[in-house]
Amino acid sequence: MQQHSLYKHFATTMSGLLKSEQGLCVALSGGVDSVVLLHLCRQFCHQQRLPLQAIYVNHGLSKNALQWQAFCQQLCDQMQIDFQAICVTIEHKPRTSLEAQAREARYQALDSHAHPGFSLLLGQHGDDQIETFLLRLKRGSGLAGLGAMKASRKLKSGRRCLRPLLTVGREQIEAYRDEYNLRHIEDESNQNDRFDRNFLRNQVIPLLKSRFSGFVPSVLRTISILQAQQALIDEFTAEDLAVCQQGKELSIERLLGLSESRRDNVLRAWLAEKTHYSPSQKQLADLICQLQSNRADKQIKVSFSGGQIRQFQDLLYWVIPQPILENITVTDFSALNTMTKPVAVISGKGCRLPLPHEHVTIRFNCLNDKIRPLHKPGSNTIKHWLKDAGIPSWARDRIPVVYYDDKPVQIVGITVDADFSADCGINWVVEVND
View: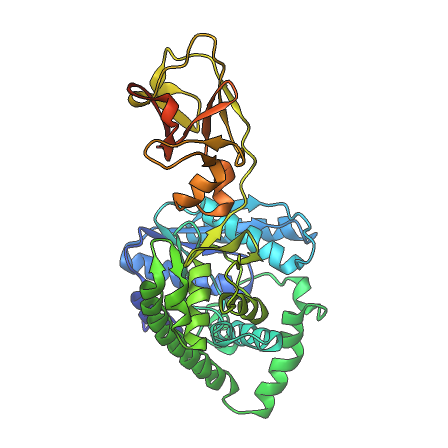
């Protein structure tokens, strides 16, 4: 039997996308796109001897959701495909659309229940790609956003998510459905033009297709060019980021030595490693303005979703807010190596042992108390010695300090008070988690 042209295209695309997959998992909604995808995958997996799984995610947003679930179950039973239905609850979040919340819940459910080593396959096609392009154009997206959806990307968990139909038009999907007489469901919400994507799908794109011959392939070609250009920019950005990074931090001097566009790209790439929030042009401009300030006492602090960019000396740090640490009272030295976190105590050079009547505590954020470090000139505040040790200002209130009664005797990991030092005593150390 001669293979369908769409299947040939699909198999070629999949061969280019596959790496070391142990199987494939189709996100099955019951709509025409996912049903055609499942049918294509069944043929492909049979030829490649790969196991195939299908998952239906029930958002509970439609009164027909259980009927659609039953349809998907029956379809997979007929095709002898491993099937699973997952129910999710959508919790309303302010400033987030219902569509976005449902999409996020769907991805989480698919990622959590797909078999280990399986890649997720989504049925988005060329018309969906154009919808995404137009939506991002409306929002004023840059080059990366106008590149729309990628055929392959990694989820947070590391699982691969594939979209092998992105270069296939809706007409080809529907022609394949008709030829193989495939049944599918119709989601009534797709006709609701209150949603921007539906408005584009039902009103705008059909008008553009009727007016401009070859509209879909032309736009898809443009998107492909944009993605290629973004990939080239990403290569240069990775090189610049490697030059500017010192460990996990950024060198301000090296960053400011770049041109404006390359500097912005480095900051975006660096932030992308820290947070999924993309900074606005205004936030980047504010940050650069602070960096270029000649004030000797400048303290950069720019807030983003999930953290802050802070400066210490010539470096930029990504700082995540931390809970306040409570003081610890130490009463038992019998098990020296199992002391309460975040510190441990070991025998050796450090502080003398506390006397029986001395009350031992571990305190935090006591920056104004004074200590006279061993091999240092004179007494000064804990804040002074932490700054001298190169501890950034926002991290100083989390450095543990050991007290005998009300006297600080050791800044853990930094120094010991000269009057309390001992070659054969105890040394307090920051405990490292396994």
